[in-house]
Image (tube, rainbow, N blue to C red):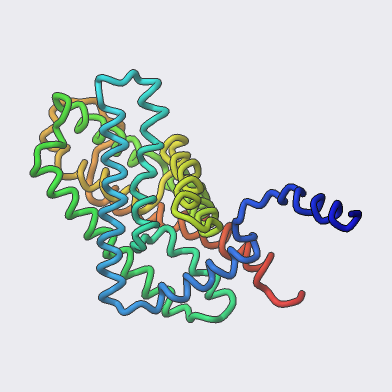
Length: 284
């Protein structure tokens, strides 16, 4: 009887709570493995996935601006909701396996462990940068031709041009540090996503870090492509709206380059290299 009682008591024990997520050390290994795999994709595959990545991120940016410009939403509600919708682009890109420059920076962990070469990493970044630009440009052209850019009696276009103009009015130092913070958050979201085991885990892990980027005013290369390129195309027809700075090709290129460099520091050094030294490096 005593043995039976003990067995019953054992069977009634509550299970230990377990979130079933990968540990930080396991995530570090996964990040390294994913980065190595990505930089060794055939160039054509990288370009095609990069075009998709630039397209997905652009749709997230569109969703963000449409929410901000919609007259049916109050300014307070729109400002809170819009960043959450902004995250849509990255969520689609992550789950669909697209290539994005800002998150491919995490491949620096493979470089630090000497499992990929600096040339492999640089080639991947160049290809993905180019492909993201092409993907964003395709969406820009189609969106302008669709006429949707002038939704809400032109308020959408005005909001987009004014925001782009403000970003171009910032000093290079301001742009750089906003790029550092932007990709620090984006790569943190990617890290959390890789800790999850299900699609639901990944989506929930991505939403807040990604939505914080536009909510706070941080910047990242792929996310800047759609609004800046669109503003370049439509700003000459926008009349006399108040803008913080003129929108020119040279200012746009400078913004994108400075943001990209800031993104490399924020996601590469502050996330990938930091975690490499914590978990991946051999004994000190």
